[in-house]
Image 1: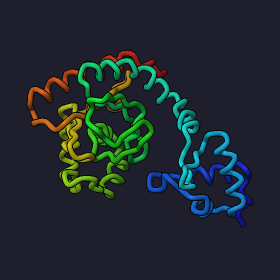
Image 2: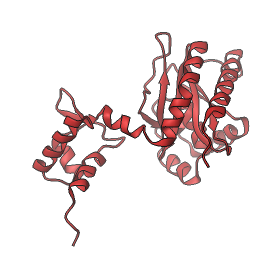
Image 3: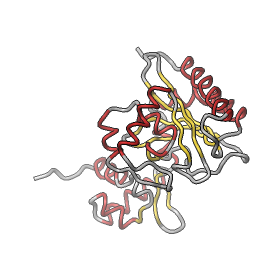
Image 4: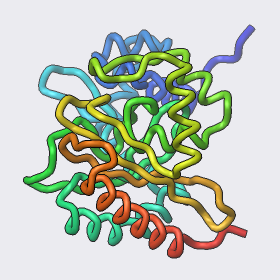
Length: 250
């Protein structure tokens, strides 16, 4: 017989009820997904909301709170990366007026750990803390090109198409990833958001391992155009600056 869940186990079950497909949950649905009685879930959710780990919306649904996200950012790799990358990201945005992203691999998704944009930037769906498909974003394709094969397999098993331009053929995607590894950058054209193209490059640590991807999102442009070359140069210079500033990990 399974042991009765501890208080910590119940709390983790509530937090674990949230995932990519369940970002907003009613109290009843939260209790169901956590496998808890409604009264127990109500008590735990109230405590988490009071602390800031969950946030109650006007429609009586709950979402992950900012305080929990801030706590997650204390993980060493993300903390170091965000602190080091921040001034470079701002400089790149100032030079290009584009939305600038820094993303890391999180399971079979791209987790956006930093984002800078302005009023002249192309409107897009990403924000800090969002997790987007790897195969439809520039930063995602960079990360996927250097990910373990099991991650590639998981991604290829669920090639959703947010727009008509998204790649949904595993063989086509595999060929694209091979080119990304060969040329050192990835390009997407309206694959995540209509009217937005992205260009991205890898960020490596001192051992040469890809630890993040740096990307810009701009209005669609012609492949191989001066616009692409200018953005690619700026991305490579910025990525090199971040890489030189990352702390050593012995």
